[in-house]
Image 1: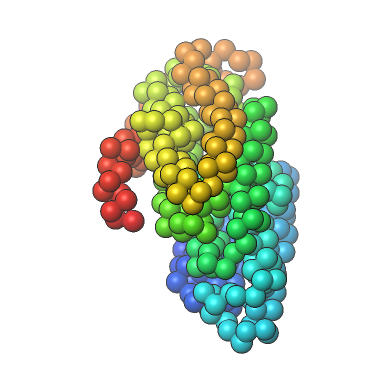
Image 2: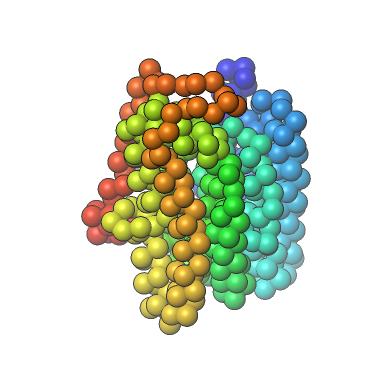
Length: 346
């Protein structure tokens, strides 16, 4: 990709995200979302592979429909209340439409169908952007309107997302699709708590982004796109494969790793809200996700030589692991003891 085009695209992504998260007028928020959508499309389709072009078209159509719904929701709210302020979303129908639009943008069930396909058609770095940075503006809009959202609808969507994310990830062999279903599952955890503790949703998103970035950057270093390539990565980078295993277990939410913190706090908050049954259900459903994380972690530490006939034999990678990957891996694994400090900061 042309360096100038890459620079313009990157700056547009930053600009779109900044406009949305800092605006308090619906039209400005919508403008930021549109800039984001248009900026990421060249990154998705840059390989010019038919699957990448298909992914870009799917992404554009879904995001355009969701943006139209955001605009329609804000206009109907302004029509009835006379308010264009994001925090003044008080009309029930407008709230319902906004929840639907944000669910489409994020990939929450039942609007999740596009997300695994788009990730599979993108490169690992673009898939990382789609899984983390592109979800930040919609989550910010949910955060700002959390007081007027429908709790029953959000809880239903959240449990369905966690269940489907875990269930559909079980039989996948492509790493990007597994991480797409992992993202859908984590979004369920964020959606279930947004009404009761919006700050906890943001904390969950930050930690999820940290762990997912670690996994994607590690996979990008080893060039592993499916499970068979993950299995043969040990001979190239043994240390990186070991830390990948720990990062995956952290993403699964196992103590004493970083990923346990948000799940622990969400279950605690749901119990305080007298939603013990909901907390129990979502905790049990997340065991489905735990299975495919364990499978990925197991494959990442198998010490098979690269003897597959489908790709060339690859041995140790000469270039060292980047400092950023090393730092993110450390944070993904070791943050749980610092949880009192993190909670104080939040």
